Amino acid sequence: MKLREEQWQKLEPLLIGKQGDPGAKGRNNRLFVEAVLWIISNQAMWRDLPAEFGKWNTAYMRFRRWNECDVWRQLTQYMYDDRELMAMFQQIVAYGDQQTGRIKQRLTRRENKQVYNSALAKLRGARSASSMADESTSHWVGLVMAAGAV
Image 1 (tube, rainbow, N blue to C red):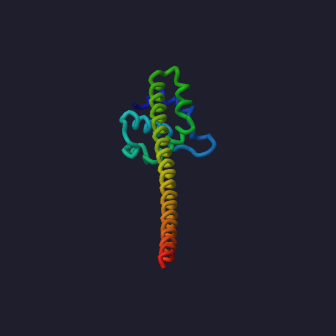
Image 2: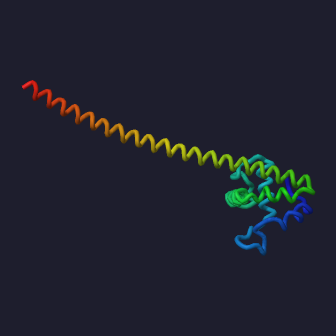
Image 3: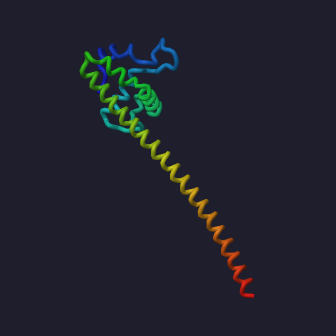
């Protein structure tokens, strides 16, 4: 999937990070969008992004920021008159939703692991405290028994 010139002309004014926009500027919005399209069309990992698209981590982080801000979904709404471009952006939106789901799963697993480890630590602490109480109790019982035998 690659953008044709007329598709780019329609898309370019809608993208964030261009000259004249406040905040950070994207070096080359077209190259970035085509990098995202390459990832999706090849079903590849971000680290496999060819060097011609720039640093894979930079492209991935930018993709995530745009995904979190729902930029892809908003752009899809403007592509109603170009079915091919609309289909491309719908694939980007679906991919972004999938990535968001994976991130949420990882965060949930991490939180569950922390809760589990915390519960284990409390349990270990309770066991050591109860074993200390058992030792002291058995010590006193032994002393009382010895005193009664005398």
